[in-house]
Length: 270
Image 1 (cartoon, rainbow, N blue to C red):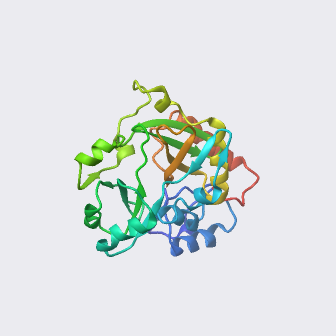
Image 2 (image 1 turned 30 degrees about the horizontal axis):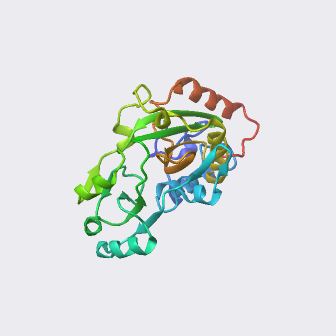
Image 3 (image 1 turned 120 degrees about the vertical axis):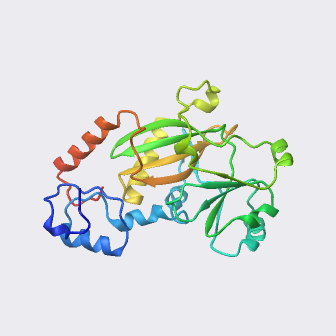
């Protein structure tokens, strides 16, 4: 364990450093001590996924579509101030109700669901607004550890029908939905909802995001649009998430660390 109260140069030696720190000061420490030696990743690579404004940009740029499906992100809008302007901004951007609202900084996992235009003014910027997409109440947590990919099902927010829209109003707040929810792997689900995303699609997506993000330890929250065959949306990217709920994580993580130490490509970030 690294003691942040002591100079990093006085500690070690290190083969691999796993960290969740960002910022210019830590980046300078990493570069001064390690140079091109392998570290978990450079802090500026972490920064992109700490902001929901930039988190999903690489998914958008990738515009992945093949025979196995199409991957995108929900239509979204960044609001940095003035909650009274939100209804007009939502209308201009063409976002449809209900709207999912998330804090702009990804350190908070709380989200809200706004059912009507008037309630949008009750939201507290800075935040990201996303169109809510019906997805059968299930999301897929895709864990990426180096080259390894593992997928688990988690219960999510239930679908919202036209009847629900006519009966509900206001803003509903939710805690860490995908983290707090029970596993859906053993649930009796509609096969169309339970079916995992195609492995070739996930492998291509993971490969491209590893390259674009400069990350090798992260997970994706993915939903499949209910009733739309092969239409997937990435809604969250988390760097270095808790891997305790990932199947076989001890074996996979150990192999990953060993592969880093044994790799000859020591100039590549993790």
